[in-house]
Length: 461
Image (cartoon, rainbow, N blue to C red):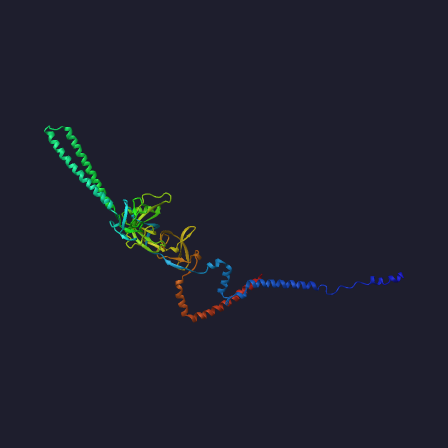
């Protein structure tokens, strides 16, 4: 049985193993094809992303489009090679005023707080608030009766003392006659002479009292010390006023003429002093706070006697007639002092002068519509006009607007010349249309030629 049981196993051992299936290498080949397909897709995607045919406008194959593509990928350097539209102006010869501008304050030549000089009841106020008054006009009246009574009393005292003085003088004359006859003692004559002197002093004192009460009656009529404009009334009639009142009765301010006090740097002092010593009457213009509206024209009156060491400035006073009252006390104004005038100066717009690392410069336009950088020395500046001391000649054209896109040798176009070209183009529209068609054909050809060039380059690689 053992042998019978072992027999079936022997053929199993002797039987050769089954051959491997014939499809074994198939998975490797399919994997290689898949990798190749993925590589092709990646390459195609890269080409499409760089080429971007869907974003090209019509006529992209033209030279202009090709140059535009190069400019797009070339960065700012390619942009600088294109003509830049700018505004230009010619340097002109003219008079350039040397003007010093400073912030000033309108200051009245006289500002008086009108107060009473004696105590009493205010009877009347003879002005309207804001009224223009003249020097000597009566502004208010204080009750004069107490001072009139005092004056009458002083006059009575004076009359009595004058009578006593006259009697003493007669007695002295008699005593002197008796003394000459040796009928009286000299001591009595001397005493009488002293009594006369005493009465004379009393009479003088009485006269002074009378003058004082007369002056009080004058002070009872409060008059305007200067011509000007009265302000708001500080006290009403019926009140008892005294010289110690803080606010007084009214504030009186002189408006015509009026002055403006402004400051300037001590560096500007030498040319100003030079003009003053020469007797030149320098004009000063007062503008409003926005520095746009002219308020009044005047002249420089005087300069302060010392420089403020904390600020390095000096004060100046200008006088104005102020006939129309455009200048108001304590008003802030912009004062423009005309120091001198430069004749036949080279003048350019202020916007054309630029600042660089080497100093101030301008862009000068050449005849071939390119620009060059020119260093200049700037003189006085007056608002939108700048004088050039050196570096520029009269008649040369300079760039006034659009200079931020320029550099040395940049090409420019002037917008003012465009209407002429536009009219010429519109006059030959048929010719331009034909040329446009021919241009598009040429651009297509150039595009094809460029494509062949890139293709040959790719084959060479």
